Image (tube, rainbow, N blue to C red; front, side, top):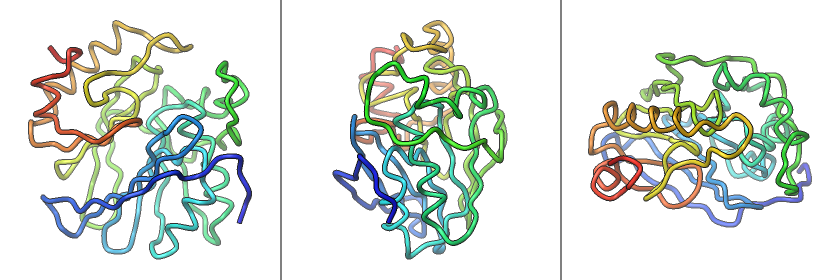
Length: 225
């Protein structure tokens, strides 16, 4: 296995109550407890934000075939495991990112100002995503929502009563806007877009912290008021 300074510190599997053939495996990885997700349907998977422990995630997904790797935005804690994940597989898996983050993603680690022990810059993306695109495998199809604010090209993936919100929306909070590419006004507009787009039953899988529901966030999250 490819070695890394980072590793998975927690993991769980969640069965989608709205489609019991779909499972979401969550991998929490160091150094800042980033959530990485594998959305699995009929033994195929999409990996979302493979964090900083791509090789270990690949090892844990040997029972499925990964069809696509997607990053919700171009920060090192979400993309520095992409290369190791691809290199750990004996088949090619394309990498997708929001089109407005295409230039930033290949310098995500080298341009990071946090001084954290990330692994590799992401490779050139194979697919550039825009609002309204669909990504999926098996019976699950996730729609791409463009949600700038944390970065210019931030995206949310939603479908089948699930939403993978990256660092746009967290339980009780929202993404930072003080990094390069951040924009508080744009983030607020993105949050209002999510407020209109996602129904209350949608289960939220954020980039950090515990999952939640849109119903809970509409009732309690000050950024959605």
